[in-house]
Length: 492
Ligand SMILES: [Ca+2]
Ligand SMILES: [Ca+2]
Image 1 (cartoon, rainbow, N blue to C red):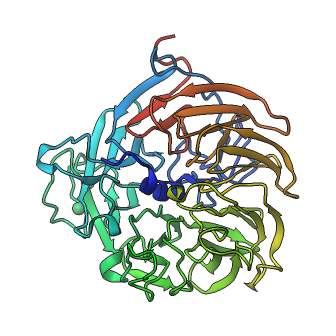
Image 2 (cartoon, helix red, strand yellow):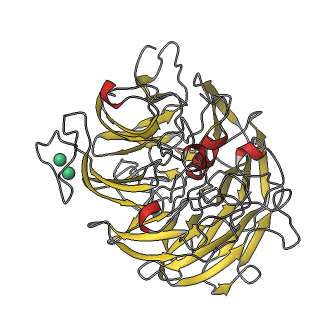
Image 3 (cartoon, helix red, strand yellow):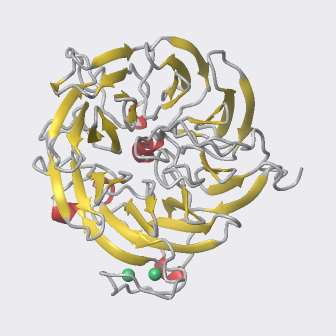
């Protein structure tokens, strides 16, 4: 088993970079403000909402807990040995990707990617779907890296990308509802712990994607379309791109799994891999899909048609890969007609200079100059997604610094050193900022212009994911366990 998070890193990061918008549905029942909160108490996707802003209006989440004494620990579920995506919570079920080192079904043994489902109230294991590793090994599907992407749930349907580059649509209730949902009804495994498949789309077969090391995109939906990035990239030579005509992003019909549109603006300019996850939002009155791609450019598309609207280069023109030119692994956050994203590199490339941007995505064409609202260069390479709330933007970098910036100007109010690499992202909730690191620490800071550390807890192994809120509880996965944390739960 690998002792290094390299791979993991990639996917993760992508994922890590979650963000949600905030919709603040407020306490006394007078719902208002809007933006990045699912509003249902669920957390149904990477970032909670399609704009990926990692913010919630939830109240009453635990500030402190102790995994040894079980203070404020509601339940703990065992995962495999490497888990990178964030959990999602919907329909009373928590879903998380992992590997098969915690084998649940001896008939499905060996190295596999696994999507697991647990009952939200108790942590009871509900069902799983497993995927054997691709024969190409590390080139396309790194050993012991499991399902690295966070799924998305809409109603009773769940969508995710497997380690084999296949986009899956499943029934969240599996076979426990006594029905085999179609069109796919010929599953080989149909027990109560098995997955009920609705459709699947193999990106390697259907659009020729050649994922570098791992496929990891977290889906996002608008209307009838589900959008995912293909992870198309270089081969192991780190020079050759085997599939330069394959798209970077695709749109599938969410009901049928049929391809609706695809775009390949990157062509043969992929620096390494493509592990960012797309975002969706209405920008300047237009429904856009925003995709951070393998040449270091961010692109905006008309969601319904795939028509490219704008593109923005996140690297200085004189930068050189890999020393100073970066790729994009973080997820773009959409907020008030702007797109917020920082660049960075695969953690296995180590630390280095980074750049973070606020982009006016109402502009059209090459908006590298015209669309740049502000740029923040005191950030290091980052694979994290930003959180934006109350005029402040929080963004972590891979060197372990958390920055608090003015969202309008990019001015820095403060930074905090986590003293460990950060792969995940901030969650802003209930006036606090929660952030995990590779040492396994979750640090909780006060949200606001003045830095104040409120608490720090260790989770027992590296935290590559982002804390997720649902129905008054926090869900956090470290490498091998999933924790449900709630005030007044467990031993005091
Ligand atoms: Ca079913
Ligand atoms: Ca089925």
